[in-house]
Length: 332
Image (cartoon, rainbow, N blue to C red):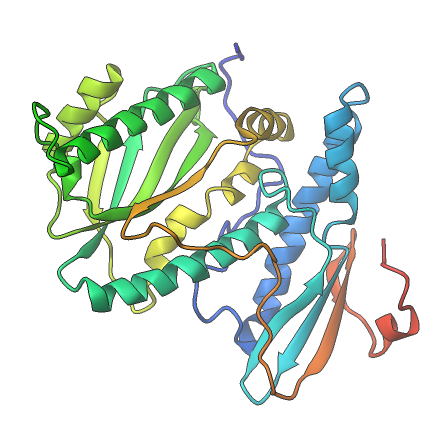
């Protein structure tokens, strides 16, 4: 799918593309920053909604636009003041995380929470394994569908080599990727600055007994892809908060909002149905909740906070009782 070679400057991109990648996101003092982040995400979602609404002959685009229109119109938080935590209790979400940054933030947060729990368990059950960030890249190109398919097929080939070596299939050579006892990762696409070419790659948190050889993996990767030796292997920074290291994997969907709306829509349509988040080995079987709201804190006192989105000013705290007085109306 040809596209002009031009410099791609994101329009209405979210300045801080974090996905609540911290285990302390619910602390009461973080609410103002959280509301500001949600406001920026909602603003971008409305820009996307306006763009899709203009595609009058595209029925799928119009349906997506309709869902975006009402996503996140209001947010209902509960302040558990004795625990100093504020949690999102209810909201209306479109769950189109590839075109809606608000849903992408919430989806990333839920994924992060689930995999951090598994990581904490692995530190106990597999103390000899350490986490490494591995990035695999293929050559940039004009055709996103072809480049993404090439990346997927190449990664599957690498995984197949690992599986055959670990299962001791006769005649199959050693692969450095067999050092990975398990991983959680995501596929990401963006447009190269200045080139206008699609840049597909994946990131993964890999659990290994020691650092895999980047040089060896690069050689193996180039043999598979025939066009790229770009493999990066590095130990995690081991921050006090492990979420700071894991967030690179779980903000993949939010990065779509850094594209022009037309490119964002193209990528979302082409990748619809693709499994962009993957896991294997010791990370296999992690379940991510379908709901995008937070888990309530049972048996703790709380008071409610209601926010409504306004185009001019973002999310604003509404007077007490606003939603109680209008129980059947959702603010537009």
